[in-house]
Image 1 (tube, rainbow, N blue to C red):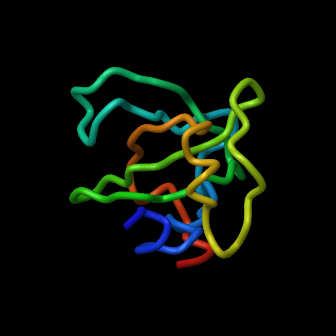
Image 2: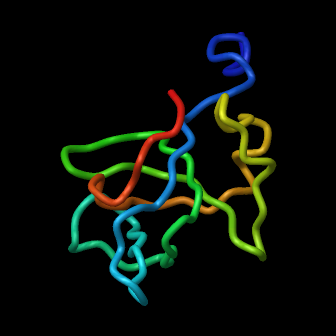
Amino acid sequence: MTFESVMGPYICSLAVVRGLHRGHHLIVREGPTKDYVVRATLTEGSRVYICDGFREWYGIVFSTPQTPCGDQQLRGLNNRAASRCRSGWVRREWLDILTG
């Protein structure tokens, strides 16, 4: 049995970064606390996929210009495309869930 046969071809929920002050970025960390190293930053309006959660943190996957991970679809992330995505953790309050 494969992951896709259990979960279907689409996983994770599409979300958008919202509420940042002008000129600020959302910090993406390696793990779900401020003690983890910064992996990347995202700007207001960036779309990400929420794939995990821990307390006030979401585990996300996202595209960058250097690492696109497929079309952003409302039904979720195609799990075949997920291996091309970057990943990390962000605080929940900065994401609005669009689907899922």
